[in-house]
Image 1 (tube, rainbow, N blue to C red):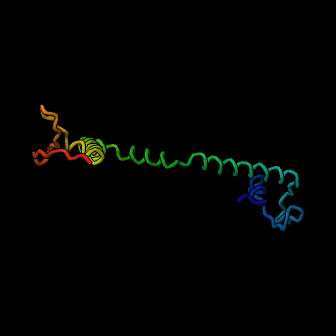
Image 2 (image 1 turned 60 degrees about the vertical axis):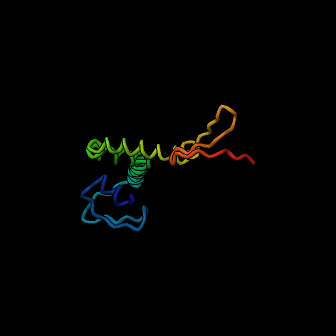
Image 3 (image 1 turned 180 degrees about the vertical axis):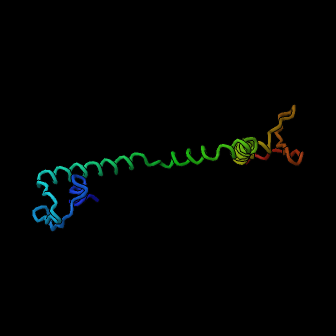
Length: 134
């Protein structure tokens, strides 16, 4: 946080003083007094710089997506080393999702004989059962 003393020291780094407020500045050791307008101008300038710095830091903060990408970039050698395992595991996971959502379609199929009788064929056990309709 910028104070009046920061503004005064920015104008004259060798200044020695005490102050209560802008109207009550006590200059020590023969320090040349600085006009109040000049101190206020420097104070506003330093305050603007501080606000710009805070805004710049907030603008440069990484979002969650940016942090993830930064983490992936930093671990790119590790990812390259295990790229085949990552690809295989992603294929297996997607296959598991497909099989669990379509399990009945994968396991069972409807077979019709020449007489029009429908049977249910269980691919896992290899058994054929007559289709029952309700």
